[in-house]
Image 1 (cartoon, chains in turn blue, purple):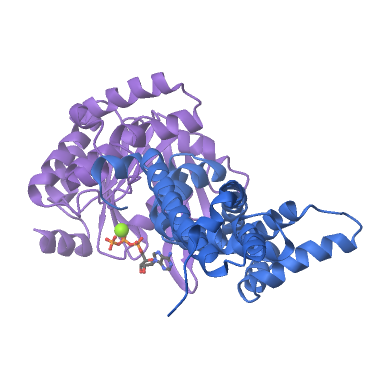
Image 2 (image 1 turned 180 degrees about the vertical axis):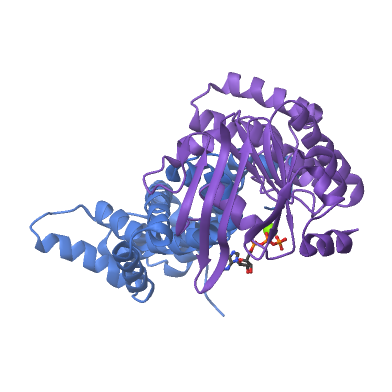
Length: 227
Length: 242
Ligand SMILES: Nc1ncnc2c1ncn2[C@@H]1O[C@H](COP(=O)(O)OP(=O)(O)OP(=O)(O)O)[C@@H](O)[C@H]1O
Ligand SMILES: [Mg+2]
């Protein structure tokens, strides 16, 4: 081992690393919020929709879960381009990530919905709650609380997987790293720095989810027990 | 006197099994009817039909002026007039006792949060749990959970309360506190139908006993019929119970 590490060579690039980190966070945050909303809607459709709706959502979920993310990204990016609409790389990246994470969210939230006992729905019905009110107050809140750890892992994974969008040159952290290493010829150092940054990002995302969970799940915060 | 509940010739099948085979009875305003009978005789099913949780194949059910057998029934309106409590309390686990109670008045009757909270405190006091408003279901005993479930129904100010073996999951000590709440309700003039295995309670509180056997009302009358049954089946049933 005679390799001479030279991290100082990367110092002039700190701004670009920072911008990369910021864009990674931004892409993942948008994809997380949209993915959660659409995924939850899909889960509702899949557990309580008409047969056609159920079938369509199931098909979508299976397609997404059985194709590589990179292929999905290319399909969104080039597919939409052939329709004559030009998307920025960042926009296409977010769109592809949303399409992807919506399917996984759908499955996770559906598991939560199915864990709610039928007697709970009957209790809500007997109190006169409408279907929408029952979904909102009696089904979704406890369902999401139950699967919150799984959702957290999924969204951490999403943040890490966003590195693949560097392939369509969305300017997130990995794309930045690719450029810096070709400028400096310091590949090993560059990817060590990037690896450490991703670990820090993961910690930030996990802590963020933890705090948000404490804010939203009041019973859990007070009693410390799971539902 | 107009009946609050009137069943006539009600038939209910599950697949090939006929569970209710021509059930007819009436319950008048302020009356407390106790439905008794062997396991599987159709007591719960009859109660569920009254609250439109099951669709019947034949016959008519009228409850507080609602034609429950009518496919065009306004279920929401029916549920505003009828409260039902089950053996498994079915409280919402992520909500406090107070929030459990506030949910329906705010959602269904559009009460303000403040009014709903006042109402919740009020019904909790009626079931003797004023100090438990901020407790979650898992922090309450079975008897307390069942009383919260009763309070939750009462908050909708129903004209009729249905109880399906509400004390069956409780040990004798906790059973007592729930029965006391129901007795207070009966004394307050609430119209009630209760399915129960507590014979002494039925005799004490009920103004009418409905003995169901094989999906029909086999024998009915005042509480005294428990002491002097007319039919062999009821005699056997009461004998076996005590
Ligand atoms: N959803 C259902 N599907 C099929 N069969 C059912 C259903 N609900 C009830 N039954 C059947 O109907 C019959 C009467 O049931 P029901 O629950 O009304 O009896 P019950 O008198 O309340 O008995 P218990 O005292 O045990 O509660 C039983 O044989 C039961 O198996
Ligand atoms: Mg029963």
